[in-house]
Amino acid sequence: MSTIRLDVKGMTCQGCVNAVTKIVKRKDPGADVRVDLASGRVEATTAVAADQLAAAVSAGGYEAKVAP
Ligand SMILES: [Cu+2]
Image 1 (cartoon, rainbow, N blue to C red):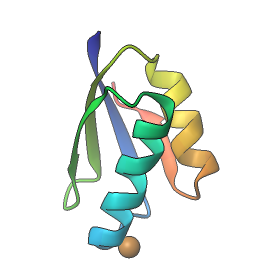
Image 2: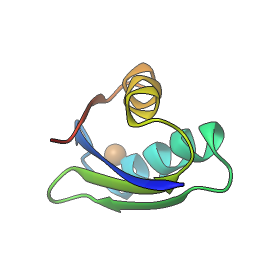
Image 3: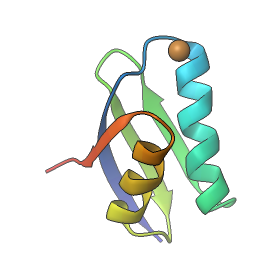
Image 4: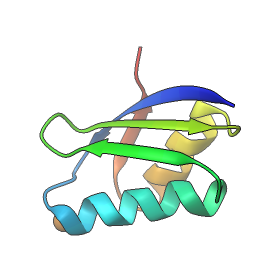
């Protein structure tokens, strides 16, 4: 497990937060996910690689990239 960070564009409401959280949890049901809507920052403590999560979130309709 490690903590990864993504910058996600396109989240506008709590529904988006829930959707992004769900996408991450689909990849890793045991992930601890924190989403900050205002900054578009997603933090997750997970066993899944950050670039895989970014790809999944992007496939879900948001623009996600691994935060530097
Ligand atoms: Cu929304």
